[in-house]
Image (cartoon, rainbow, N blue to C red):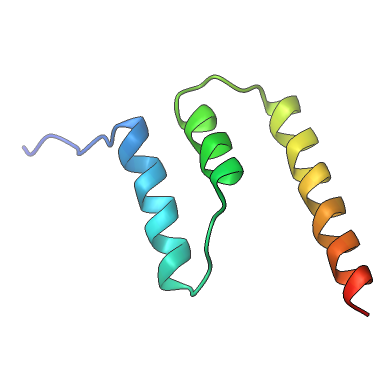
Length: 67
């Protein structure tokens, strides 16, 4: 039986970055840093949710300022 392939934390981050690029998106350095912290288990679920809320608020504020 074949052993399952278990990606490293860095491979998970690279996969996420690559997937975003294929979709025509770019990830800023701050987002990459958070992705690395998540992949390495250095950030709690509550911290992830707080970061997501903050990013949504930033994106919405940028969109409003463009109108």
